[in-house]
Amino acid sequence: MNKEEILKKAQGEGKGIDYADLEAQHQGAYRAYFVGVILIILIDFVEGFVFKRISYGATMAVFAMGFTAFLIKYLTLRKKHELFVAICYGCITLMWLVLWILQLCGVIA
Image (cartoon, rainbow, N blue to C red):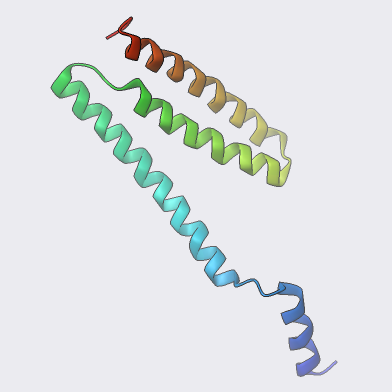
């Protein structure tokens, strides 16, 4: 097999996918996730300091992002520990969702 045949075979395996672009998207999404989490936590601290309360909805969003990330990871890799972590994040998300709804209804401050 010469170089041209190897190159042609390698190009056919990728099916037109730009792996560098795909990797850049993954890195961007990964970093954006952490920036979002840090900003939401910062907003919670500011609201806690200024208003003497935090937004349970913002905290719920942090855990919902984690739930989504680990659920997709589980669906892709089918590893049981990813499912376990996704379930944990899901339960915590539900807890914060309930607290947020109670906060919106005025039951809790």
